[in-house]
Length: 320
Image (cartoon, rainbow, N blue to C red; front, side, top):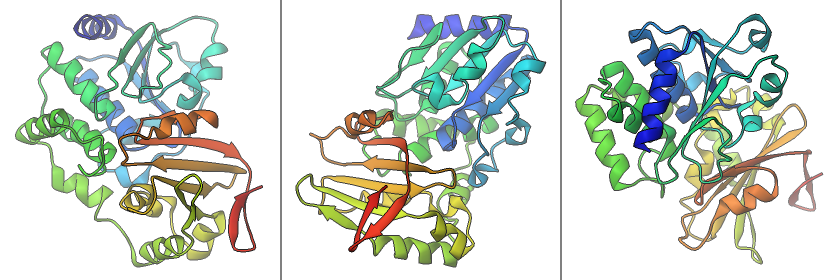
């Protein structure tokens, strides 16, 4: 890890133009990792651009430099990038840049920084630590190895990834290491109240009513010991709320003691259903289920996307 971290640092310092990539449908970890690296690159005067293939999460608007993200894929044709840094993505398809990179007439150096055990090690440099609670924890170790000072802005970015990926220190990803690093980041000036205000204490009345409606649909498959809840695209449209309002539902459902696995299915406008899997059971690995559907993640928290629509028939919700 130390050798790879130092090699990556040298690649960044020697680069002329760096592209930073956060994965599609970005969460707190991938965006805060990108913003942390942007914060550092500004201090060393390195040219860089941040890209995400889908719109950003409004609940993370407090992150520094988030406004500089670009979602237009034309940048791959208009600009030359000698180094591409991909955060929190098991593969380039999930990152949303696989085809864009294939179509380039040159081959940039790809740096893969992640914490998922299902990572495909697709980079020229791979800094992947599967026992880290978040990608920002991996990035924290990268900064430490390379003696990079962490100011309050950098600390807030790094703490955001840890907080969101551990479900505010409630899920199995929470470890002694993540708690120790979180404490160090707060000592460095990280603003935990700011993070909580945007990512936890941010529910509206209509949003919580929808949560209740989703809870009323909970069903359990006794054979596989899986509890399932669904969110249809009409739920959001009829209640006139943003998609960010339902963030955290899967993690909350993980408090359920009557099932080994929790699965939340969310219907998207483009004919895609996003599945989120959670478990607290030590002998269960939900990433293996996610991989069956082309997804991935961690043993206790994973996800996937499939084509289809949600339909209720005889009181049972199913994918058609």
